[in-house]
Image (cartoon, rainbow, N blue to C red):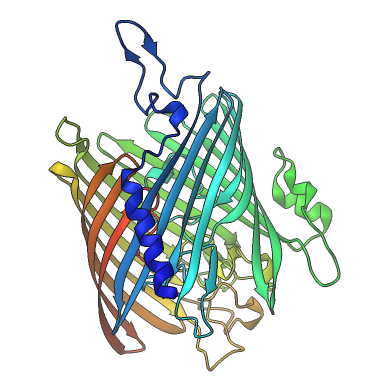
Length: 491
């Protein structure tokens, strides 16, 4: 029965190649600009007074090896998008299928990232997975936009197109409900984001709230600056159902004074980012501050509670557009990420900056230094090679020392700090990792959208406390453009 379900999902996806994803009402209004015809003028679907709906379906297949085991996910991706007149539009993504691998969102192994995961048998070797995301957008004017949806929010302005990771909020992990408001005025752009996360405590999930301010300033055509502020608060415990914190809904006030005003022990983080563009590239960086005491930093005593992270990167590109290939060229990227021990850790996991046991920011959490290098080539006929190298040193906690924390697991309470001073990155159970991989593939345009066929060999060398292990993985995939950027296992 499980095999039958798996094949059904795959066959539906393959059959979807031949279907026209645009509703019959709008088949003559495809994604082109306004076209001049001698007898009449045909409007583009993006004109203000148009309304339309599109539905697209493509297969979602990954097959790989997990050491001596063959793992897979086989299913269907769907994208639904629509617009109503000038002010309303929506986009909805989902994928559903059958997999024999767990939903471990940050594992280096082949994985099924999912919002919903239900085993098909008691052995839990196969399960139905589903990933759901999307949003409804309302634009009362060209300066204001409101969003209501389900997804993962990578925060920042133009930096979304630059940095591979984010020390503020990444696009990996499990989707969550959110609402946001985006306002543009002159060279400023302001975002207020409200999210609901949850943590599994015992046999049930406990909700927690997150409120974020992000203010960006486009100082010049080349220089960009962003300010980040976020707070995590407990929405419910055994004695008190707090719900949404109304004080944090005010878009004009800073969170720290509000926290003092309501007498809470909520978790507040601050951040600063910048980027500078040159002719064919950009320099960029982020600074994330959890807790910081300047006097302790000046004394060089490596106090555990000085918790912060730094990102520095450079990205460059050269692209050519022509009739034979829409996009031909290359891009490169080098990025350095550093996170101090105990960053993001709190006394209570209900206010940790994470969702369902996973970090919201960098996927490695804390207590690490990472160097990431990428180079991407796009050739004629839509062939491409995407190669990357990742090397990092990360300090983890010892499983046989449950009452001691060395700062690697953000969900372990800082009550268990092992030593107050002389804390260094990589302390504890030291892991050294080097991963080298390439994804070689071809993108094929169909009536349902772009579909990528690829093979991805990967070598991972791991050294933990002087014990080395080398693993080789080879992954084959057929995936739509809806999900390609999400499923790259580059960490």
